[in-house]
Image 1 (cartoon, helix red, strand yellow):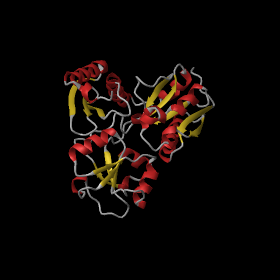
Image 2 (cartoon, helix red, strand yellow):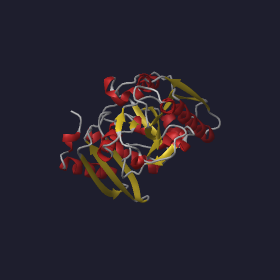
Image 3 (cartoon, helix red, strand yellow):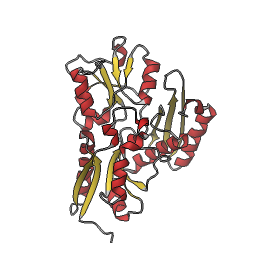
Image 4 (cartoon, one colour):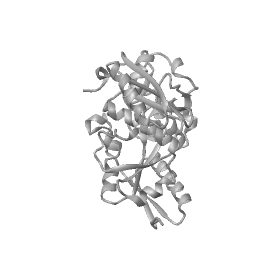
Length: 317
């Protein structure tokens, strides 16, 4: 019989969104194992404190560095993160394992206007409207499709970004934000979305709409508990997406999208991958379909297609 611990501690960033996500995982664990006391251990991430480009302070690793340290020193048993915020497996460098991948939510981005403004879409925004986002993937695609718009880098947690938008603060007050729709839903702000942007306009982030729960590698007790939460179908999609990201050696400066979805569930998976020049002036887009039981083959196929179009010219050096 597998040992069930009396208590489990979940490490999480202390932002509003992260706390909601961690509380959701805690509820799932309590339902699966009612005999276990589940506590949250919030902590500040360097990425939450720094307002400049992530590349200045270590890339995407800044979202999970404190969580990884807490895992390594056994201060927490598991951690919860957005899959899109995880560093690529090639740049993580820590002894962590994804133990559960939760079912994917809506992967699309959303357009958000200041409170009280009439709803509109990207197509209908006035010229030189100022759009707030810091994601290289979004910036490149918006520059390509909407050159009349002005892109303003905006970082910070979701609710403070919404508050800044509504208050009209800063040297360049924002006319709109582009944010994760799944994030809006998790903090009960789905009604703020005035447009769900089609993936044909904004290809989604790798891992978009997906929460992951990690544990120390080799921790069989945590691994067993997290099996109850894992959604194998979504886990397969995420494995393909992150496998391709690793092959590209993508980082926080890489403007890319890898999106996998089932075309004949559960037998076949289609992968759409795109890499963009930050200016929006150049892009490579490829797609392939393969059997769901050969994830490595899909990763290799997409990687070869990208390299066949000289993707190196678009990757950060």
